[in-house]
Image 1 (cartoon, rainbow, N blue to C red):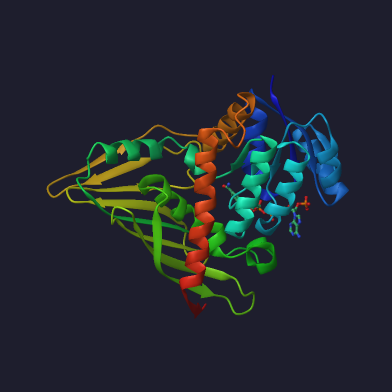
Image 2: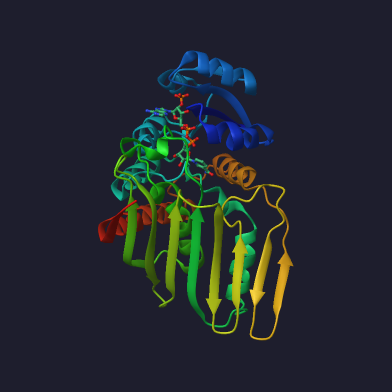
Amino acid sequence: MAVRFGVLGCSSVARRRSIPALVSHPDATLAAVASRDPEKAKAFAAEFGCDAAGYDELLTRDDIDAVYVPLPTALHVPWGLKVLAAGKHLLLEKPSATSAAGARELVRAATEQDLVLRENFTFLHHPQHATVARLLAEGRLGQLRSFSAAFCFPPLPAADIRYDAALGGGSLLDAGVYPIRAAQLLLGDDLTVVGSSLRVDGRTGVDVAGHALLVSAAGVLVDVKFGFEHTYGSSYTLWGSTARLTLDKAFTPAATWQPVLRIEEQDHTEEFVLATGHQFLGAVASFTAAVLAGRGAGHAEEAAGLRSMVRTMELVEDVVRLANRLPA
Ligand SMILES: NC(=O)c1ccc[n+]([C@@H]2O[C@H](COP(=O)([O-])OP(=O)(O)OC[C@H]3O[C@@H](n4cnc5c(N)ncnc54)[C@H](OP(=O)(O)O)[C@@H]3O)[C@@H](O)[C@H]2O)c1
């Protein structure tokens, strides 16, 4: 039996990435999409061959098992809690919340209801990072000394939700969470933020760029950069005592992209061309597998992922608390 999905919000990422992946997966079907605007919902529904609904109406439907929520970030917790209260599994866009307390509230609700809760960090489902983790564990880089990661892209249209502080805008919540989550993935959740800067736009009040310095429990030095006032870049570098590994397009590779992993040593450089990966499809596959296996939020593996989700928000809060604020 396939997992029957509903979608709250006719959003850009839903249309371009998530729904095409969802409708192409054999374990998922799309029952309905909801919008604040009935005409928009109808047009979206016609595009994907499903029903149109309003947000609250969608949550009352008994032919929906799981709801995908690609709403502006500040709406993730209120609507996520409504989805869980309606007894439906929740695939929630990243970041899960605008605060660690909000992320904890979602985990509590999903655990109480024994429902699957996933934050849709699709890069976690690209196999390229498992290759990196294996090389690291095998000692290919010697002793790891530092991890640097960045996710930056050009300015967005002025009306974009990312420039609206009340909707949870800003480059830290939108882009900065990627390099932070990548540090958690490769170095563990036990990271400490030791300093940060945020470039804040005086007109909108949101940060449009920033960086943060962190340190891992093992003493690995971490630096992350993020922003939307740059040319596009998404990459990370792990620098060890004997070699340095760089992965480009680390967070948003197209499904057709063949990742190139570069290892530089004292006397030579190697490049490995890795297999392509469809990370949006991977995220849908992983979510539906958890639902079909009956793995609620209390299941050991689900709970581990949710601890990382909450930890991301704790680290984000520390970046904000310690930030040196500069006018952008
Ligand atoms: N996983 C990824 O790779 C990825 C990529 C991009 C974005 N995202 C995340 O996905 C979420 C949505 O991003 P997006 O770029 O798709 O945004 P978007 O195109 O602006 O979509 C947000 C949707 O939320 C609904 N909405 C409800 N209340 C709203 C309000 N007060 N103002 C504006 N929209 C409102 C709207 O749908 P209706 O008008 O139909 O109600 C709107 O289409 C964000 O949390 C973002 O971080 C994730």
